Amino acid sequence: MERADLLRCPARVTLDAAQMAFFDGLPTEAPSVQSELGCELERGHEGSHAALGQQVEATMWWVQWTLSASEINPYTWCPGCSLFDGHSGDHSPALAGPTSPAAGD
Image 1 (tube, one colour):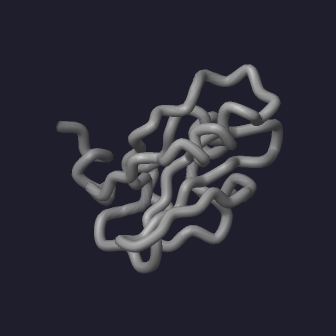
Image 2 (cartoon, helix red, strand yellow; image 1 turned 45 degrees about the vertical axis):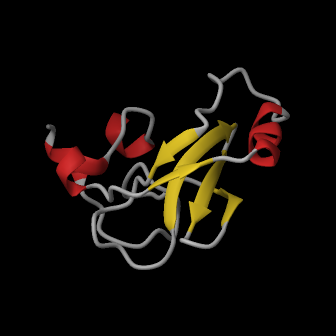
Image 3 (spheres, one colour; image 1 turned 90 degrees about the horizontal axis):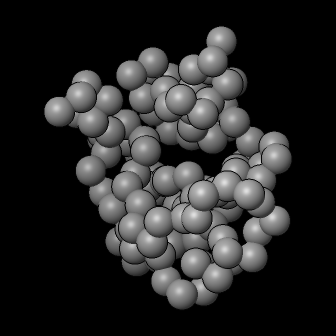
């Protein structure tokens, strides 16, 4: 198991039909969204869980969820890592993904 996997929250969410339809309707050439997503925040974070659903130009559409509800929200990149601006937790380099501006700098 990679270090990043040990640092990430283990929570998962399954998108419903309306959420999948929203992502399918976005104007993008990106790969299709998976129906099951894992939280990308650090283990032990405060607040709702979050996973990147799709990026369209400068807008990242993040799925955020709790035990009782989920929603899709637009964000921009966090300047310190591959998460959304305003996320909870640290800016760990181990959590930086290959698509983030921070990972390419």
